[in-house]
Amino acid sequence: MAPAILLPALAAAVLAGGVAVWRLQRRRDEAGEERLRDLAFVAIDIETTGLDPRRDAIVALAAVPFVGGRPRPETGYTGLVNPGRPIPAAARAIHGITDADVACAPSPAAALPDFLAACRGRPIVAHGAAFDLAVVNRHARAAGLEPLRGAVLDIGALAHALFPSWWDLSLDGLGRLLEVAPVDRHTARGDALTAGALFLRLVPVLEQHGVLTLGGALRLQRGTALIPGGPGATGGGLTGP
Image 1: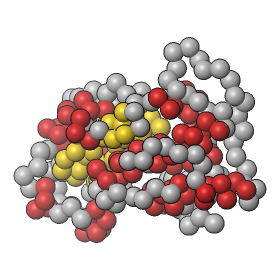
Image 2 (image 1 turned 45 degrees about the horizontal axis):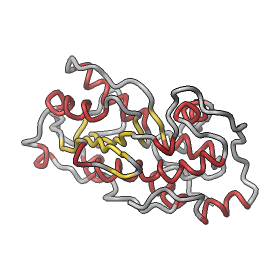
Image 3 (image 1 turned 90 degrees about the vertical axis):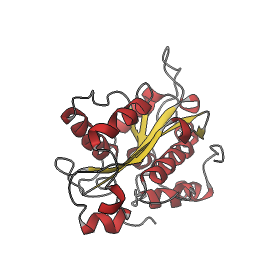
Image 4 (image 1 turned 135 degrees about the vertical axis):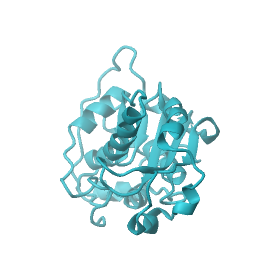
């Protein structure tokens, strides 16, 4: 993976066009707070039987650690999961995972301990993080496992804060904005790798607006209002300008 670079040409053009951006006063780092440029994090993604976080089940999991600006998939977790139910045709059409593919895969209760272990102790980065965490933690509780807690950064929310007029907050749309080519789209491993790469491209943009630390990014994210049913709500949205 190429290291994070300065604001790409496309994003610069958006800014030059008069797009309003978050203006935050630069301040000293809080004691002990991790700087974004030095942040070791875990990018995650899941594939499921559908889009209802209260009922749908996991069919694939990926947790990819990023250290020193590079992915370390060999130290993370990637695998198929047997959801214990047929995978609907609508879901198969998106991720391509069939009942036959998961027939010999572990159950969520068997797969989650290794996935959760790969995630613990580091901030999590994801696209549509609320959905992924809701599904993962529901399965974890059902299996008697400790759910994931701690810092979670959603690249859609962060991008919306920085580029509020950019309407397509899907992974593909963010890739166009930040000039990152998606990897193995609609696979858990590929989408996790893509989310991590997009976050690295957002870091210098965040720094240009005074957001230097993990805490600062979390505060910016909390102040970002995504439109219900619009960009970021389900990973979709209209195409950008």
